[in-house]
Each structure stands twice: as C-alpha cells, then as structure tokens.
Amino acid sequence: MAGADKPNVVVTRWWWVRHAPVRNDGGNIYGQSDIACDTSDTYVFNAVAKVLPRQAVWYSSNLTRTHQTAEAIWAAGFPKPASMKWEAELAEQNLGRWQGMNRAEFIASRPVGASWFADINEPAPGGESFMDLYNRTRRTIERINSEAAGQDIIAVAHGGTIKAAVGLALGDRPEQGLAFDIDNVSVTRLDHFASPERTLWRLPMVNQQPWIADPAHAAMHQPAGPEVKKLA
Image (cartoon, rainbow, N blue to C red; front, side, top):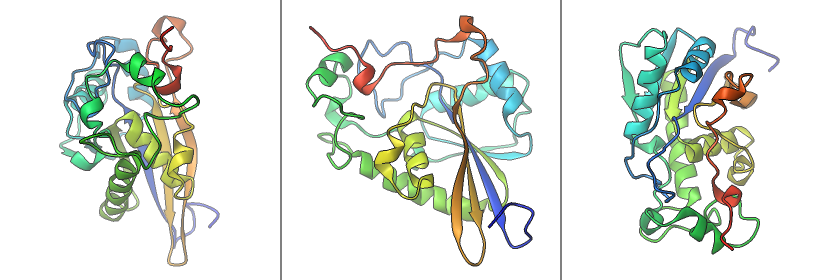
C-alpha cells in the first residue's frame, strides 16, 4: 500500500485539534468538567486556520471548550462548515472524584514517572480508566472512518482523546500514545489507509504548532501529569 494514488486504496485524513487553554481551572483537575477555554490569542487561531483543509467534515466532543475552539478557528477566517457533529465519545477522560482536586498535590501522590493520571487500566473513583477512554475513542474513529471514508476530517477534541487516537495509529498501542505531548490548539494529523487487503495508519504530524515561530504566542502549553511541579 504505497500511497493514495492506488485506485483500490481509500485514504481518510484526520486533523485533530486540541481545545484552547483552560485558564480558570484554579490549578485543579477538570477532566470531563464542562469548563470554558481561552480563545483570545487570535494569532494562534489565524495560524491554525491556514493549515487545516477547507473541504472537510467537522466533529467535536460534546464539551463547550471544543465548540469555543472551533468557533475561534472560524472567526480567524476559516470558512464555517454547514454543520459540526458532536460526539460525546470523543470527550476527555471522566476522572470522577479526582476532578476538582489540586493537580500538583494529586501528581505528587502518584508514582514517580507516571505518564498519565494513573495506570491505563486504573479507573478514577466514579469515573473511567484511560483504557475506557481509549476504547470509546477507537470505536468512534472506526465508525467515522466508515461514515466519512476518503474525506478530510477535522476533529476538535482533548489531550487524552488525541493521545488515544495516536496510540491507535501506532498499531493499537494505547500506552505509547501517552508518550506524546499534545499542546492546546496543536494540530495532529493521522492518515488511515484502507484497501480490500489491509488497513494501516500513518502519522504525518503530531502536535504541530504553526504559530510557534513567534515566542510571544508560546503560552499554549499547560503542564500536566509528571510536568506539574511536585510540592515540597
């Protein structure tokens, strides 16, 4: 399967965009809490709007911050699509009773070197494990690959969701997806190739930040997981 020029190969291109930064979380874990984001840096959205494909179908999670991010991209000059489908299965991991806890204190309580809030199979109390998030994300991607086969798909989602998608593209290796940074408003492109004989993924770019050449607009990275400074 050398490329899209082969007539029996269907290429579906995913353009994942993580939502804009959350500024009003109080330093707390928010998970699936429906919290707003900051879309005030128009330079960032102008840059993102220039790299996304014009003829695409749009999807987002059901959480407000993804809708605000999409609206900011459209306001930056990207032609607004006729519709954008909301997919609750693309929401961030439900972190249950961990939501609302101080992020630094929580990370300090976890094993050193953890790449996420917990082991991928450990559910948050009253919530989900990362594997729960991975499995619902995988099911949704597989369904949309069928619905929108051969098209460009722009999906505005969350850090955990996009890491899950990367893990799928790496050959159904969810834990490997956690090794990647997914910054706010970054673009990750994952291409799905399907033929009668086989399917495979390619990863043309992960965590692209088209605004990054200007250091005045570098505030799109929000520390999470092991990057959060542990309390003394």
